[in-house]
Image (cartoon, rainbow, N blue to C red; front, side, top):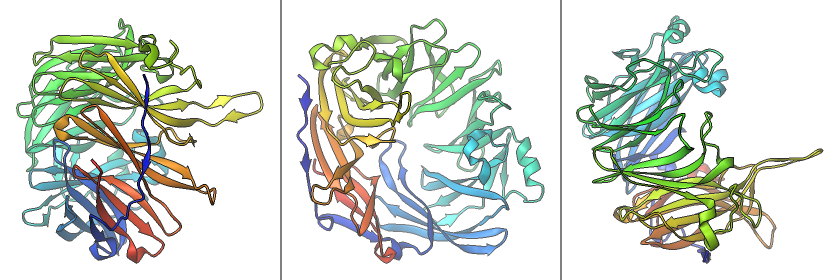
Length: 500
């Protein structure tokens, strides 16, 4: 039977069992960035903050950086000066850890063209590295087509030079260096990218380590990194002409492919929306399916779930598709993917792959905009449903996590984290609860843990008339809360222990 998880609402005293840091004491200025720093295994290493101090001149801006360890102890801080380009806005990209260094990237763009994403001709990236052992920030450097150049870009005739660049290039950290990921500008009046053929790896000193050619015929191919750890890079590549989608499993030390696996092509029965995870002796791919169309996966026409397992040579050792009609009494759902009780569809939010071979699919009930003759009803989301499968990919149970209905929002899901050495997971979501006395809605943070197949659920108030709290991922067993108060001198960040 479907299980409905009992909701326990904990009105927690935030001062108990907390590690607290005052933002006013950490830095003074306009916070440009506050982000967690991850190890390559996705465990939290610490937090990185960048604060804008002032304008040195029309062409230069001064910033302060602060690095906190995972217990919120200040480990490093200092100042640096970056170029300021007229008519260009900027945004710092999530910093990444490479050994004992942090690589910090900053994307510049013409502000009126940010809306168009990659279609902007006027977009470029600058980078720096921070050595945590010496607390020294490097000089800026950037990539221009096939060259690594130290220093700032010259402002004179910048537009003309940037427009000629084929790629937007930025680094992704691997164990002892970084991948140079090339993001192509779009072809004019098209959503197709220009031709990219290679994935390149560099050492931390910016010397090239290897180059992998995933597109030898230099056709139009779209790519992304699906999975990355110390042993494997999983690169997804889709050929726009053939519609072939191939997973390239690459050794990050040598740049050689361990194997390639084609997940779909023009002759496939299904489109796939999925997650990949590399375990010790196998690669696991799980996700949702819809009937094949050249345009790709369509959640409105989802037919169910699937699971594929590959050995270390790329051979299929397990492949199974689960259709909605197989749910039986565990889930009352039509063949077209609509729930019988209320007509909602299941929107996939996260796929969990556990070490013991079991899987869980976190979905959110979603109803798209409904159009009538004189009115349109807004899109809305409501409860989460967790569908739990055993290692043979048989549906064991469906668990319901109740929450209030949300309008104009595609999802209330925030993020998740693996715990208990891969045998458990915790995920976080937002919810807006109506106060019975005032009838006002305040937002609360929902926390759901799944450990050895058992689920626990709690909620924490996040807003009041005096403060607003934003949650961040933290070390295992904790959550980081950033509290913003009416009086900014009392803004703070703190770690709160979770109840599991």
